Length: 345
Image (cartoon, rainbow, N blue to C red):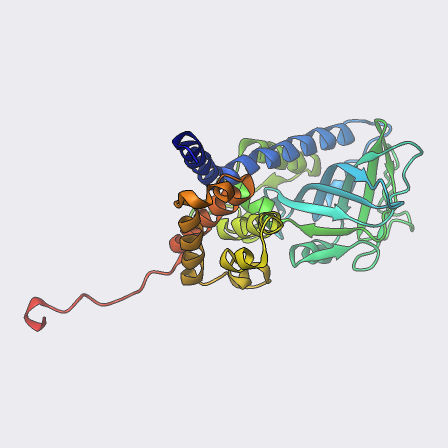
């Protein structure tokens, strides 16, 4: 292999490391788009007098979820998946900045020819909101759900049919309608929430982007309430995944692509620590350092540049190094008394 190929391989590897270090920031742009799309959907839903969501529905709501562009499955009838945001009102009546959620499964009663729909969920009980924040919520099973009223159907307090915990709406072809979506699973997306808010450490201030502030203020205004100050967002912080969590998720998705290129001997040599693929605690730092050393040995040896220049190798190596850095930063500092005096040495 000539020097040109060697330098190209090193340059590509440097790009991979850089991308591994900046993937959280780039992911933030995707979440920003979700927040802005949710604001657009909510604004249209709340400003259509005859066909929108009645403001009375939000007056005593404990939470509002907006999931733009929920996609209909192409191979499974009724299947769907979408990513959106959830705003929660606390016991003091203040609305908090959004956490990210996913909506999957169930049946939405799609119109013929419609492949996507915007979904709004209004939570009328504290229990239903806590169900999501504690893990996941299955509509119809964990919380009674029903199609919400639209337009001037404002008899929400006396109508006997409106006794559900969650009311659902969808927009297809520009029209909002109440729709039953029993069987759908709503779950907090901690990785997306962590990427968006930057994972502040305990005691640090949560930085709420302007788009999230505008969305929260809009919900609070429609509900006739106030929002929590951007510097005080315990819900967003509590349900954010750490940088290490985000990086581990990336590694578990990318590593199989690398292993498809390798024989059993190389798979064993470049194996990542097993805890990465299990739920629970992260891998031990020494095990991660040992894995990084093995990848570095391959990257720095001209004999293996056929492998080292592959994007699958570069991606895993770059993110693995950043994962090592995140674990190093997260390692607790020892609390020790002053060192022994010079006379005792």
